[in-house]
Length: 227
Length: 260
Length: 44
Image 1 (tube, rainbow over the protein chains, first blue to last red):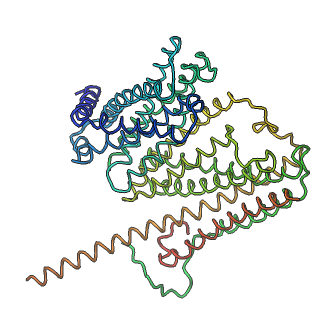
Image 2: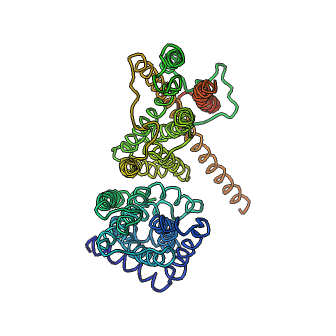
Image 3: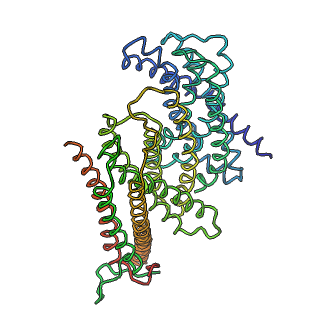
């Protein structure tokens, strides 16, 4: 069975579990929504919120990413499923790719919901000429986040006292995505006079990040979970 | 299997982590440190713009230099462990010791840099490219050190840490790139160009050189000792495991004896 | 001159930290070395 086929099966499995358990829709999306709301409590000024809305979208995404990653690996370790897959001889790169793809899908759903929440809560508008940039940003940023999240999730899963390591490892690692994605979305939305053309260099950064961690992650995942 | 005496009965004191080589290295290091203080605080001239505050540079720059050196060593040692044929744990210990030292030096860089910033810019902190990247560098390696303490066998620790050690080094250029690009957008007029280099005359350059040399020697001295200490810590842990296994076996034997 | 305080303070802080790092490693080295036979010490 080819690695690509295994990856698709793993991804389909993760997504099917999600559809059945509805953790994303019942827990993570509400969590993200609550985060967007309490940002307004802390940053008590409409003008401030409007100005920083792109940043808040990505901050809420980062925090939700941690929850999603922990969930992604909790379903594996609960029954020793990850070990079972490895013992069955499945290529770890395929497992990594499959889990990352499923995570990416969930992240995309999350980001779209957050975008619309921001339109409502922070009075954002999407100009027509920014749509392509916006969509591209979402896709490239998501790939990078999924790559990093799946990798560190594999490391931080399993034993007690490990899950708390995930935020410490992940947040510095996704700093480039936070910076790049926020700037790109600011350009797409025209926040504070940013122009669409500026955003494309940031997308370039996001793409390099996604490729680097995608390749690095698939190579590193095997050694990390082989314990 | 090694036997370890809890209460050593040797006549002569057992050897420590020092060797003739490290003792010589240590003495040379102390001498260069004295030179550094002499040049940094004494012989070198005041700067045209910063006046005496520039003297902080002679301890500040070497600390970040050593941090970079230490993290490169960690990455190389991690690679040698992961991809080496023998998978010698010595590389893992070197990687860990070097990262510990590097992280402490980054912390020193940030603190002393804040003092320097207070004098020259009037603020302890700015979100410029260099400071931001350094802060992220610090947190990244704090994470590396946390991964080392996850427990498990030495091989497990070595493998996990090696992966993280190599990823951290991959991450740094990306972080640096994104932060620089980000900060280049905000060309606020600052009194001092934080990314600009000070126009240095020969004596200042020499003082900086003395600092870099002194700290490099210190790093080598310290990493040698720390690696040896880690080897002994691993030995003690192995011995503790051996003892625990032996104790369990003895217990099982006596239980069987009682049952019979 | 408050500048001198910061400058001297930086040097003191730096060297104090170096001294602390040295002392800690030498102390744990001594403590462990007393418990481990010399044959196992690869650096000798």
